Image (cartoon, rainbow, N blue to C red; front, side, top):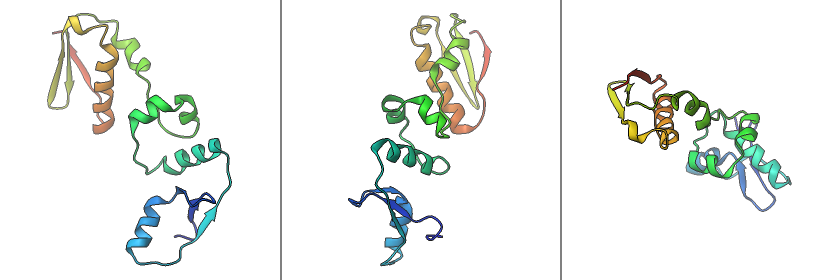
Length: 141
């Protein structure tokens, strides 16, 4: 497998792709592994890091949301959600809301809307992403 997906690093030895493969190789006691050394611009390195981890990487969503361009991440294949998508629909109701989140209920009082709509949408979206289920607006409380 390592011949097909070698460790990718900079001339300085900074690993851009294959961190977990490298760790596994070290733990297995391998002394030599295929390495592809690249001399890319910072922007090319960033693009590679995202693309290399799209399928299996773990993400720090706060860093991605605050330090990266969402459109660029989406172009590179990362499924990016923006609060505006959900907020537009949910902002319309400013009365109390009751959301069904699986076995749990999220009750949102009128005074929390609309100034906290983005945070509420983020909580609902995070739950949906984590469980793979859709939240349901049961009724206005």
